[in-house]
Length: 239
Image (cartoon, rainbow, N blue to C red; front, top):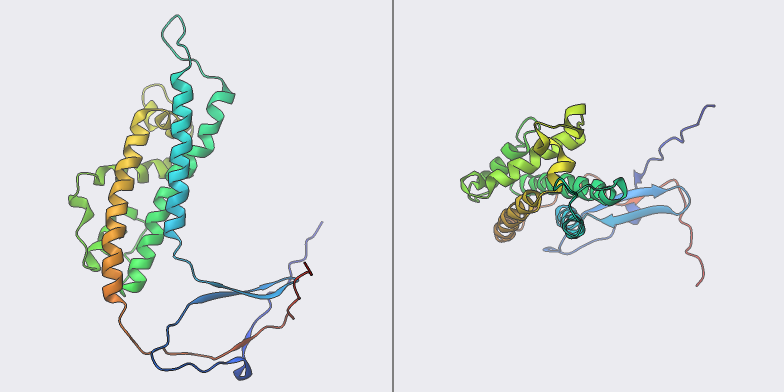
């Protein structure tokens, strides 16, 4: 069975849609899209990283709740707390979201810093290197000198094991601490995240101050004014 892929509709510049603005007016960046039935939708460009970081924190709290559940499990005759699949299952989504969103928050923050401070993006996919380069390049301190920096590296390493799973990264006897799910059930996982969170919060706070200083008036170069879509707008349903 073949599925037909609709051709992407293109928007074009239309001067009749353009609106004048005075000198010194604030500019809001928007992303425009064409909905299949509702027509054109434009949303204000978000900052991304605060919400992604919030998602990581929520997952950390969910994992912490599971730790409380594990603590109340009675050990067996050999001293081992045997957990059923149902008991561990909530940790699967929680540890993935905590770790992956933590690294995604770094990436989105770095993109914002690079764009605002007009920095050349560091080459490659080295998350730690890009974060350091963005901080130093924008006038912030080098985070690698902070005692909490190794926690960021540990989360980045766990993210790699989660996103690129191998047999050794989902089961190991000798190196269980390299198995992300097993690692997430230890108190170390929460301590590592909390150190990361504390450092990223400090970096973000310093960046807010620096970002305000970099937001100086400038001249906006506009390639085309006004956009017209091929799709017509659909009125909202009556309430």
